[in-house]
Image 1 (cartoon, helix red, strand yellow):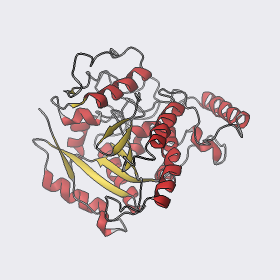
Image 2 (image 1 turned 90 degrees about the vertical axis):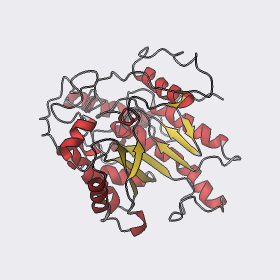
Image 3 (image 1 turned 120 degrees about the horizontal axis):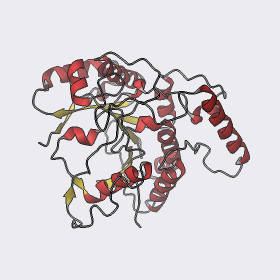
Image 4 (image 1 turned 60 degrees about the vertical axis):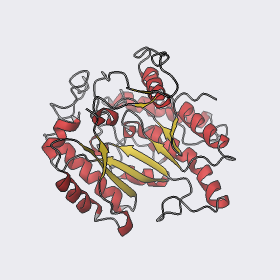
Length: 349
């Protein structure tokens, strides 16, 4: 069977939910020479074409053999602060929430997955959840997957609704594995049989729309945004137990140069100025983005999540200082075994 969006690396099932990003996309931080297996690149291209139809030729990799590793097409999307066009207008937001409530009420008793709420974006949450659950159903006998990883070319936390819905859809398979699988986990500190891991740039707290999610309808129906720190508890409730965060440097101003975060003026130069044309929020000052990443890491560690800090081993980055900062950030974890060093990834010129 050919799967459109998900892909595998080793014994991990990867789920990309967007190609859009609020910083330089993580694959792009690996350098101009970074290549991926053809099947992986094709899945990421499929996500791009769902978000922007026709932006990449569908047969772009046809001339390559099955074993080839290929480069992703040039990334020329503007970097964004939000994917939800209704965010900035109270009336539009109110109307959207009311529509979602009516849809959910009309489908009551028909929808097996209460967490699948349309967010108006592509690929649709339903299609992503269906593909993930289909693959896990097909894997019941083979026991191929050790973990599910929510990651891709774009930043998953820009689509918090999809991220949480996918994670929730995995719960039945996790419970089944924990009940029937007697094999030890590959992680000697964990008994989790099918962990869910999130790979992120860590800029979650800088996302403008955070809290204005249809997913929050179940709580109270109010329109005011939830406190941003609730989102980590949402992730943990959805059984996202592992988080991989790209810190990349200990220097907050060097971070701006390396990652071009779009949460302040001067960032997000890929494909444009990186700022939404209707963004009425005041821009952040340079250096704040790095602070947000550090805060996100510490909050996740405090909650007992298994936090992995990553960096790109490129010229000019002070590895010693980055390692020192990583140890400091993870020192708040209640589990001493989860205070790991930085995982350095190779840079390809």
